[in-house]
Amino acid sequence: MFHVQHLIEEYKFGKMVIGGKAHTSDLIITPSGILSPWWRREGHLLELRDLGELKDSDVEHVVIGTGYSGMMEVLGEVTDYFKARGVKVYVADTRKAVELYNALVKEGRRVLGAFHLTC
Image (cartoon, rainbow, N blue to C red; front, side, top):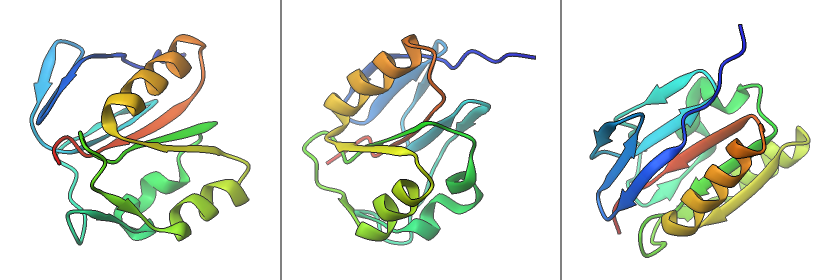
């Protein structure tokens, strides 16, 4: 069965709406579902282990939203891991990341999106 990923309908500081449902905690969107809330070991730092098994999702692109003002740091181990697997990685403030995520989904791409909703 082919699954169409949900688009992000709205994003503002601390809130993201997907499929008509409002999320107020950080989250990860995969082609098969949504993980919310999504917690990291350190709130403003993304380490590879913070993605757990989702890091091995069958995706073509990874979009990381680093917060409304881009305050979350992404360690090089995260981008290196995906690049080594041939997966394109984009890191941007969450406002820009949402636009990019939606554009890729509209193109029919398989995307993993990891979004910090505040800061």
